[in-house]
Image 1: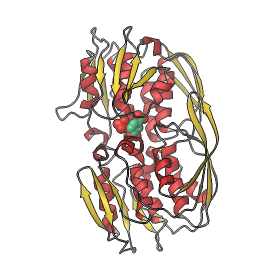
Image 2 (image 1 turned 60 degrees about the vertical axis):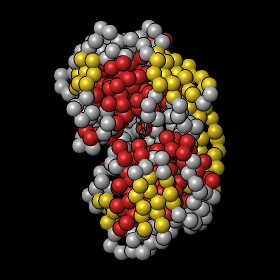
Image 3 (image 1 turned 135 degrees about the vertical axis):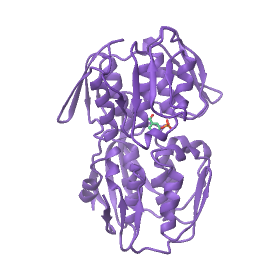
Image 4 (image 1 turned 45 degrees about the vertical axis):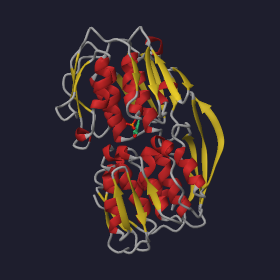
Length: 426
Ligand code: S3P
């Protein structure tokens, strides 16, 4: 579907967004493993989290979706049902990778598949540590899906030093380790999002900049009730839209402000963005609060290397803010962008070239030079990647004639209501 966007003058209002996608995946998975009924409120309504729910239904878990609440009744330790077919993770890397850890500890065979985009994303990053734990897991010859998992009697704890900064890999190891009596130790040199650790009450300590995570059966989930805060990654599109608009003010209610995710707010503030946090509270171990944003003049700054894992999902929209900020936007040390839902360095560079910018594509980043030369009849390409689609929707709304985004339906992967939310605010 080609979606046309007109130039937007002002943004005003109060926005409630669906629950954080990373936390929602984990809530569904942990409730499915626990014995008894869990209740989840404000769960993400994304296609990705639906993929997780469909898989756990196939694994014998009762999931009742009714209005605002989702009730999940798990059967407890070692009681997932043998699936009758392959488990389809759709577009969702989090589903495939976290599930690989859970399934590695079960006593049945399973196969994880995904859509075209997920099927070319690297899976050896989870296969390698899980095999070190004794799991019977194999990827395709190319190191991709399908993941084929056979039961093993030899699953055991390990001490593992993370090779990539990836919360998905860390969580896959954690989810195998919660099935074991002994302690698995994961050492992270670059801290990544820690929702799994917080939700499972996992002990972590930081020594000499290394985060040491100690996991065992003690961390196996119990049933819980939880209201999931709004998704900061989804919020970031609206934050940038408001910063770039004239005479605008937006409040986004109850957003997840976990410090492993707030790099985008810190960066945009350092760029001159007026962003305030109000009504901060801690709910279910996660910090959340309201974000108040006002129109601002932005200036590009150097993006520190160590913030990259924290902002990895926000780079597309951050670059849109950078395009309209004083100075040139430049990012490096972000090679992980090449293996997201699309090759995001390539996707971003392709689209920025349509505007007649001088774009320098590098292996681990890119640079935007000069000003927009061409603003007519622009059709941005989303490459079926939800975050590219939303970033270029926000960019389109800055152009005097507007612009269009191809394959816009891909936004449903994280935020199916994006268009209605925009309508509500403009
Ligand atoms: C996620 C972790 C990140 C992020 C993804 C969601 C998670 O991926 O990009 O959108 O929920 O754990 P990596 O951990 O592979 O960097």
